[in-house]
Image 1 (spheres, helix red, strand yellow):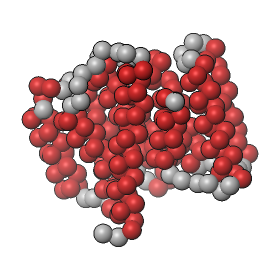
Image 2 (cartoon, rainbow, N blue to C red; image 1 turned 135 degrees about the horizontal axis):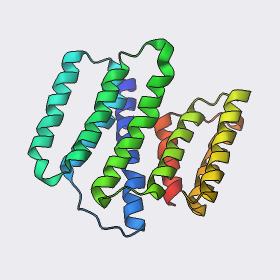
Image 3 (cartoon, rainbow, N blue to C red; image 1 turned 90 degrees about the vertical axis):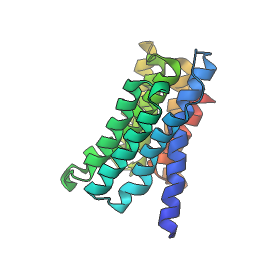
Image 4 (cartoon, rainbow, N blue to C red; image 1 turned 180 degrees about the vertical axis):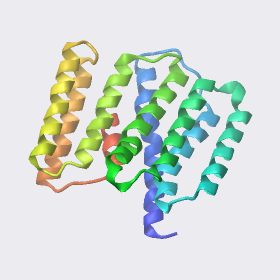
Length: 224
């Protein structure tokens, strides 16, 4: 296996962890009622991470996508009694979104970026949170979405005025959401600190990595 594929496998593992880290930590920190670990759910989420970071760069054909879907539904059938059907549908929707990105024209590459780096990670984490906590909390969703969209912005930050304006807009939106009561003070500080630190590292130390790593770091900062 060449270096690129090994790197993509590692990214898949990091992505898998990043899907879980904030959802599971939020449940535990707030002492919410929760289910025990569901290994079928873990397998389904792992399929999303593996397809996104390892399979998609290999440009799989439609036959592979069909086979991948069949495997997904087999896992669902075996673990049906222990999982929520809405969670299974929500996670499969993310795989379907990933399937669709292969057919989006290059001129709409921003849409592909939003699907891969914002929509899919956000809704997989929401599905995990819903499974373990049995409800959706605005205090979970808003910080998660802020970190995920910020990670995308930082990934494509190039030091130009437009990029700087986007970063500033995220910081202002975070403060506004705090005053509206959608996020608490600690989450506000975490999002702004994450944004500032990553941008400064990118500008002055030329530290640049992938959206997966940025999102993982951001999720860790939210729970510290």
